[in-house]
Amino acid sequence: AAGGITNTRGRYRAVPSAGATYPLEIFAVCGRNSIEGIGAGIYHYNIDSHSLTLHYEGDVRLALARAALDQEFIYEAPVDIIICALYERTTRRYGARGERYVYMEMGHAGQNIYLQATALGLATVAIGAFNDEQVREVLRLDKQYKPLYIMPVGRPA
Image (cartoon, rainbow, N blue to C red; front, side, top):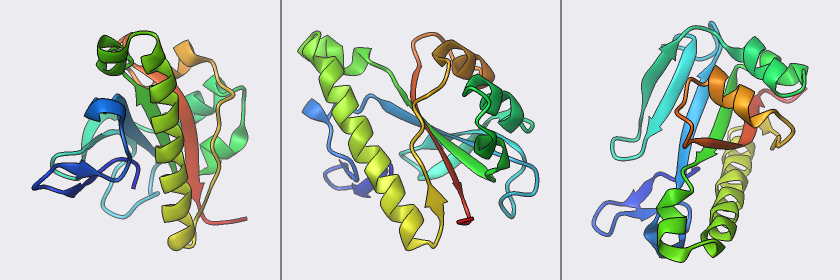
C-alpha cells in the first residue's frame, strides 16, 4: 500500500511520484513473535518482488522508541513501518522544489498505510517526532537515507 507496483506493464505504483522518481524507501521493524514466520529484525520492502528482505537481525524496537523521544507505543507495536527518503532521486530532476515533491509523496504513502491498516482492522499513527540521526543509526542506514515517518502498526487498544 505504501508504494508497491500495481501494474507491472506500466510499472504503476500505489503512490504517485513526481516524474516517477520514487524517492521513498520503506523499512519494517519487527519484534520477536510479532508476525508469524518473520523473525525480529529490520526489513527492507523490495518493490520489484513485493517482499521483505532482512536488513538486520534482532529486535531494535526499544532503541527505535528511544530515538523517537521515548514514545513507548513504538516499542509495544509488533511492527513499525519507517518511511525514508533518498532526496537526490527527486532533487536531481527538480532542484530544491523536489524536496516539496518528496513530502507530498510521503503523505500519499502514509495515507495508504492508514487505509490498509484500517481495512485489516489494525491501528497506526504517523510519527514525525524523533531524532533523525538516531533513527538512521538504529536502522543501520547510510547517511543519504532520511527518515520521515515512523508508523507503528498493531491491534487497536
